[in-house]
Image 1 (cartoon, rainbow, N blue to C red):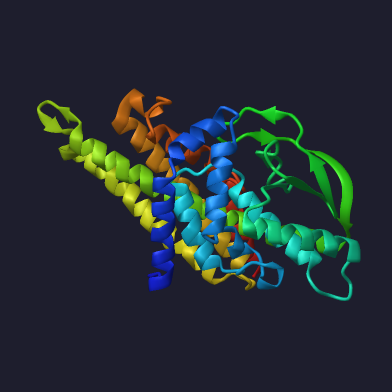
Image 2: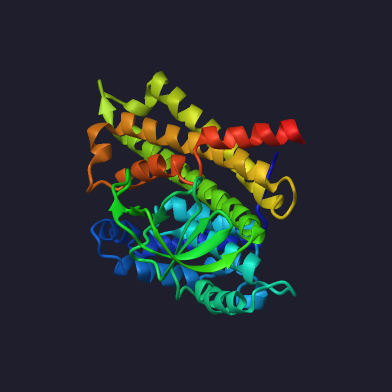
Amino acid sequence: MKFVLDAEQRLFGETLDKLLAGAGTPGAVRAWSAGEPEPGLALWRSLAGAGVFALAVPESAGGAGPLPVELVTAFHELGRHAAPGPLAETVAAAVLLDRLGGPGEDRDRGFTEFAAGWLPRIAGGAAVVSLALPPAVPYALDAGVADLVLVVDGDELREAAPGTPMTSLDPARRLCRPAPGAVLATGPEVRRAAAAAYGMGVLACAAQLVGVGRRLLEVTVEYAAARRQFGRPVGEFQAVKHHLADVLVGLEYARPLVHGAALSYGSPDFPRDASAGKAAASEAAYAAARIALQVHGAIGYTDEYDPSLWIRKARALHSAWGSPADHRARVIASLTTG
């Protein structure tokens, strides 16, 4: 599949790239890891001003969406710059709130008002939301920073307390096992809305992974051209060239799968396509991280060295929103039952 962004979509991606490059994002990531979220929250508000979170919120609730292709474009850049925070979780929560609180005669009036209060805040960047969807997404990311924590428990949607933070492979990703609180909505429609939210989270995470992998490839190629051994740049050695070429092939294979999933959003094929994209993106980004570490050596894991931010994020996102094995199983199941 060949996928080409149009001029407006390319401009949107370039604008986000410049915004993130000029906002001191690596410093915000390190501050977030140290428990100082304000630089990251300032970045969050800037991203909202550029329209990132509005892409998942319908126009009727103050957003511009859903616009899945633009959302993939945005999350690719968020991955390239290792932006911190529950990004995928917030856009997934927007889908959940909209599906349960949108117009309809069978809607619970109280929850409709609840959703109507939160969706414009998400679109405008005034609300950071974390979401747990057990068993696929058992933890609430950065719940201690979130303004709202939601957890789906079977046919129940509950507001939750952050719970106790847990150790993560990526210090900028603080995982919490939420403590469920008041019931917000019940019934089979909760499961259906949770499935839609999961699909959006998978798509956003896959796009982040492609961005992470792309940035790791860029910095590794740059380093391989500068680092010398035996009087030659290490990038001239055939083994290094082959490894970097394999990474590029993996990313070039994953990217159209992720964009293809964006194009199928809202169709019966979307869950399958999102899983195919996530499985490919997870493996491609993980391979990029592994080769980046091999080429950089021990410096690649040094906290002060920026590539460590992407290496750790690639490993953490590899299994976030479902492991590659989980998503391959979903693809196989959809093919055998369809």
